[in-house]
View 1: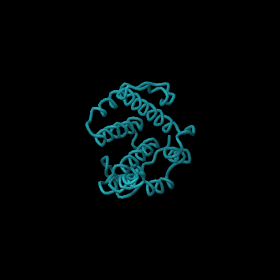
View 2 (view 1 turned 120 degrees about the horizontal axis):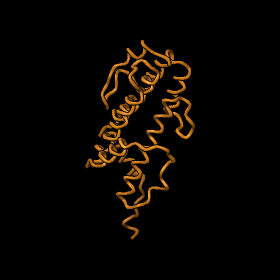
View 3 (view 1 turned 60 degrees about the vertical axis):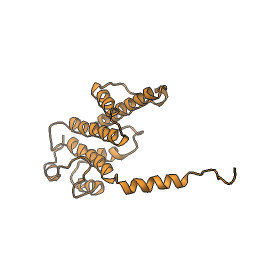
View 4 (view 1 turned 90 degrees about the horizontal axis):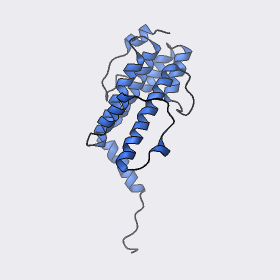
Length: 181
């Protein structure tokens, strides 16, 4: 197992939704000079095509978690709509009661925003769990990268940007002309 004492010690802690003084791209550049080829490949796998098989053990565990999480979300949504979830499930061999509980708890929130935040808090906690207790390991650096991606997503969620995206969607919708009727 590789240890990255200097790199890991230089990474600032940050809460969900805030970014440290650097972005995801700068973090990946920082890592390039420190990570072993295997851990650097793992970092690339985190943002790569999830349909491709993962080589790095951390990435395999993370992807298995994501599949279980997403399958649970599909089952909860299907149950609410009284439809069959089976066509939308991805094959998975595991079960995690913690994920089931977390998703059901997230869907107890009233707004989609609160629901998404609860799901991302579940993801955030999972990065910590699978990284283990060695704060200087390659797994810890990869977990940090995941938290950085999660936080970057929340940092981009702004009211004005949301209105702009909604406006673009509404502009793209072609409504039938009232005069044509």
